[in-house]
Image 1 (cartoon, rainbow, N blue to C red):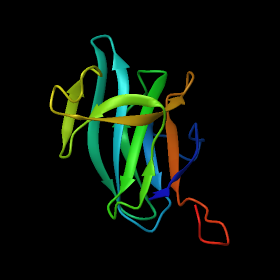
Image 2 (cartoon, rainbow, N blue to C red; image 1 turned 45 degrees about the horizontal axis):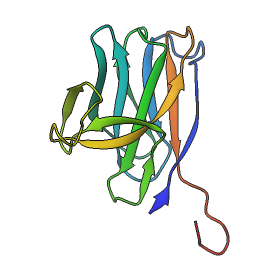
Image 3 (tube, rainbow, N blue to C red; image 1 turned 180 degrees about the horizontal axis):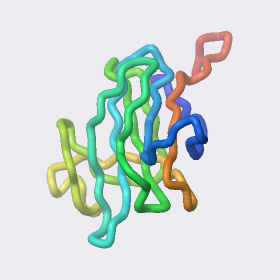
Image 4 (cartoon, rainbow, N blue to C red; image 1 turned 30 degrees about the vertical axis):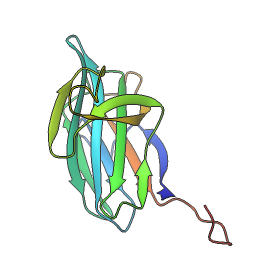
Length: 139
């Protein structure tokens, strides 16, 4: 399976006056995105946002309420995955899950999400890109 690459998330510049958390799909495939965050009530994960090739979508609209957000994504073809070290719960179909413990016992899958520290920014953007391949074709 090809490993996807995350481009570092960055605050949105003055070009975009909207406050939100956006994910941009810089690949040639449809990508499904899940997001995790903490609230006063605890951990929450939500998905799936379908983001067509070379487009962006707001995952969270309005000023960001948390400092840290967690993203997991996979392409529709099952060849690329953008993951990280923070384990959170996901489901196969559309979901909103509270809590990160006992994913399997509760009927969910456990997946590694990548952490983004948005600092004090009201907006943030993550760019998903194709994984570079070496000349031999190995990954």
